[in-house]
Amino acid sequence: MTKYIFILILSSFGFEERKAAQKNNSFECVSQTDAERILGLPAKATDHSSKEKDGVSRFECTFTATENANADRISHLYYIYEQYKSAALAHEVYQGILSANNGMSGQKQLDTLGDEAWLHTDSENFELLIFRKDNHMVRVKINKLTDKTSLPELMNVMRRMAATL
Image (tube, one colour):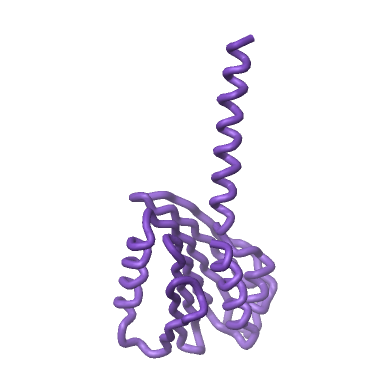
């Protein structure tokens, strides 16, 4: 009997651990509804992956529009969520991305999102939004902008996400 109680106790720890892991992974991807609001078109999830390397947890997903706003433009939303060991490390990676894109036109710092945020667009083909909050970093790229793509919706979704990190 004692053996069974011990096993039950151990298995409940595993259950709580899984629940905690699920809670921590609540930002793995934007929802399909949010992706469709951002793209301005019906979309479906076409790819996703997750990995952990050198203490960095990373989740990627892609949504692809299922309708074309223009005959030659299929829109994609690429999403990456990363959790680093520390805020300092996340900041270092964030600064590295900005440095690599230094001097390109269409860049803007955003003061209303997370601890630091940056938007880069050519206003024709892509929008890239990156924000860092504490030890979390989120990157969203919309490739093949259309007249239906919504930067305000992208900002709303990212603000909502940042507020809960």
